[in-house]
Image (tube, rainbow, N blue to C red; front, side, top):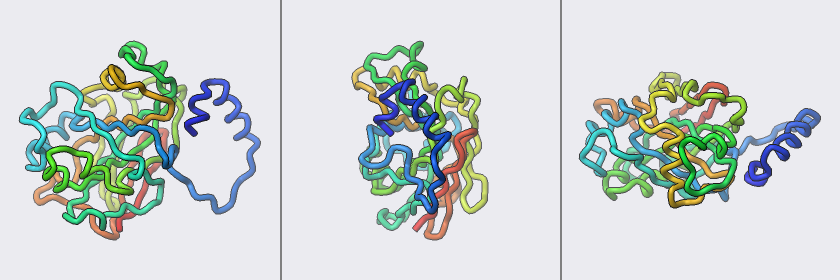
Length: 255
């Protein structure tokens, strides 16, 4: 997939032509769109106003005093965290029993660049997918940073597909919902982002080269487990379902 993305419009046309004639494969296993070894996975914290408020009031935010950040809060997940649709979320790897879900729209970079201006953001986007930024909340708080709590093996379900940018004239029109065991927990428009996609691309690329296949998870809306009193962490047997308009459903059981 990174090679296809790097091939630009010509490669995408070839892929679409081939797909029209491709045979149906029986019993195929659907992987993450960009499986291990993945490209860079950049994630943005506290990027919806209501989630920033619920996180600040949860007692688990040890990173800053302000409720709404002054600039994008960017961290990363390691490639070993990536898993696919239907894969099990290994909550047993969180010794604190505080595993939480975060449904997010993710941007897939198509054209490499550094120092990308916000006005040119669309030239560098291949498409969009879904990420569940699974988090061990107690570890996130304990270490005063986020990679150890969010980078556990299997804590980045991704998929089920990449919706190409030409199908999404305005990503702000997309809507994200998350259900746990059939109960709606998150429901928000991408238009509610504090820092919009052009700003995120400009900020990250200021000193880091974005490459084809890189992922930017744009942040999660309100309704995560720590937003409840008491917190409603994931338990074995739970099923998390994240859906974004046009992309489809990313569903994963918890073990």
